[in-house]
Image 1 (cartoon, helix red, strand yellow):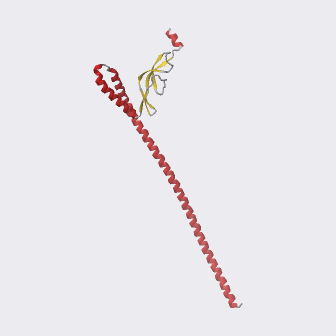
Image 2 (cartoon, rainbow, N blue to C red):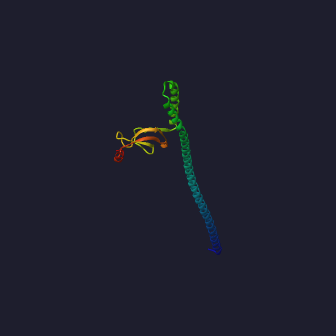
Image 3 (cartoon, rainbow, N blue to C red):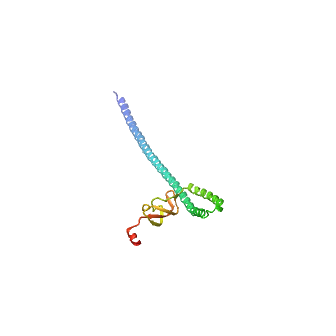
Amino acid sequence: MSDKEVKINLNVNKDDGGANVEQSSEAQAVAADTAKADAEMAKLAADLEELRQTLLRRQADFDNYRKRVEKERFEDSKRATARVIEGLIPIIDGFEHALAAHREAEYDNYRKGFELIYKQFLENVNKLGAERIEPLGKSFDPHLHQAVDRAETKDHEDGTILQVFQPGYVFHGRVLRPAMVRVAVHPRAASKEAVN
């Protein structure tokens, strides 16, 4: 090999070394850009997942809010209806007293019309959700009945309701007015001695 060929080979090797250096710095730059892009992509993916979770929580919160508002509206409606029914109960009592007062023959036509109005009125109150408490002959329940009198007797079981002075009303399980009743109690030995 001649000196000239050796110098050309050296120049080629020098050029190859420079190209390798240039290629490795380009590869490093590309690798750095790829790593940076991957980091940005991972950050965007994490942000997206966080936004999805936030959206799901917001939707669940909104559903809960909507259900709570609907329930509150329903409860408000029930309370308003209960107040109306409580205001109508004395009118029902008035009808009953008026119907009980005049049983004479001359009031028959008047009474029939009055009974019809009373029946329609009572049906409409029942449609609103009110139920009349009919406790006669049943056991006394302090949640539904108010004992205003008691009668000592052995003819009935202890705590049996003997008479209803004023009917009670219940609206969706809530007592609007307890029934006023007379309750049977068995005589005690002490009360027998007091009588003798």
